[in-house]
Length: 146
Image (tube, rainbow, N blue to C red; front, side, top):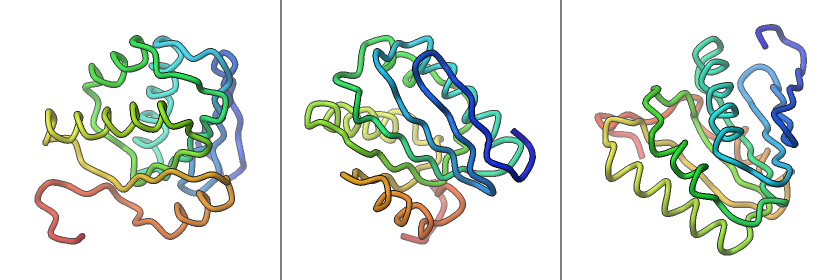
């Protein structure tokens, strides 16, 4: 995933697409497990390390819950974040609550991890518009910008 063309990669029933120069789209299938989530996070990290911070769109329309293995994969992640902004599309209420709790917990328990804006959207087009307008780098705890 190092050139300027769109690239796709399957991780189980999920598809990860790199949209140059700095956007990654993850279309989640079902079911989602911790191993697949870890592989997707590794792919995000590796791509971000090579190309710089990524704006990530996660289409979670088919995700009905956030299993423990997925939460553990996120919680135990020790790699530095390479995410500049994160948009979720199609989140059901319970999934949205779980995601918000995970993001908040990471920010509280791991202040060393850069924070980045995140948003929830009903339509992929709205999420892409928001991501394109987002800053291109994650915020550090020492940043003074909003």
